[in-house]
Length: 469
Image (tube, rainbow, N blue to C red; front, side, top):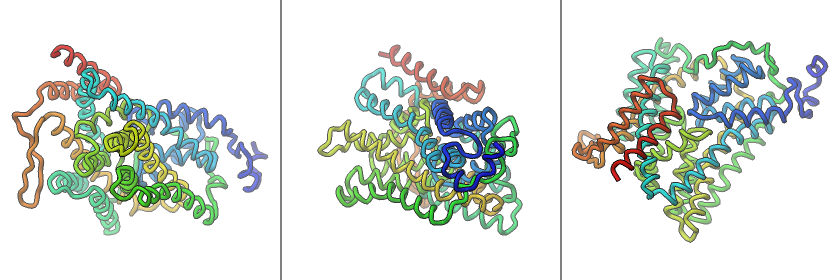
């Protein structure tokens, strides 16, 4: 090991087993295991990676893990998948990042595609409708729990509470675009820290994610930066150009060949835009995706977005994989000359491509320069402000879901510059209300996990459908 540590940077780049002694084949096996266990949204996925990579394997230390996680939190996109890419790259260069990132999303791609086919073919069957009726209630409870969970971490003072409240009011009452809210929150945090405001003084990143503190020096990777983590600027420009081409060539090709009104063009453009503004985690951006997919493009009905979210919650992979279901249904319903199922499959895969290719771009280009962000207090303050605003965004998502799950009819009210959908009280769905209340008791009172709550609510939906048939 000592001899390996003394090799030159060139030889380290050329060996299949780098100086840390972790073979690439062993890393692949571990990433397969991480992918298979990646249930429960980003919090659960990050905890799985921490347990396996830090506590069990001791490949990477606590501080290095948290530093990588905080960097990924600053980026748009699913932070858990980007963290996998980052650590994979840190261990085995570009091929390590590619394998880690692809394996992390692969189970979700396959699972959501299979469920999308079942949904499209059998969605009108009574048993399937009953199953998703139960899922909707459980998902609503889980989103409300996310409001509480993120709020406890982010709303540490009155300024942060005010930011969350302002984000909710802007979205729910004035329909301010999601990207504008995120940008405004970042500016407020950045300026607040520069002005010396105490409310923005502490770090806005993640706290401790694991029970065992593993020192960087006691791990395979150690404290030093690997030689491949200090590439020349030309490498960053080259890898950036490759991934920009992989991202934009399909989008521009669709714009030229199919035209701006084509459903595949709309999917490529919309989800490419989403990939740039998805700060704050999956729950935050889902409010933006849900409203655009339902109200602007008409790809889905409101309840169907909850169905897709239920699929993503019960399958491995990033929660943002629900977007594949959105793209599938959008293309399935506007197939043009294609078979609807083929169109849906292509639409779902296109959505996944333009959602995740940018994640590799951000990491491969940004990770070599991440050390410059380690002690940047202004960026930490901007992140803290974004996280606070995200609480309001997720609350808006929960209320949007609740209105469409619990009520059969809404009416739009416009006054004082506001535009609000209010429920028609006579259209309340009492079975959905009872099932949602039960799911909330299970989540908040008895702390039952996501998967059991989803499965239990689905079974109750089936029982209710059978009893009222």
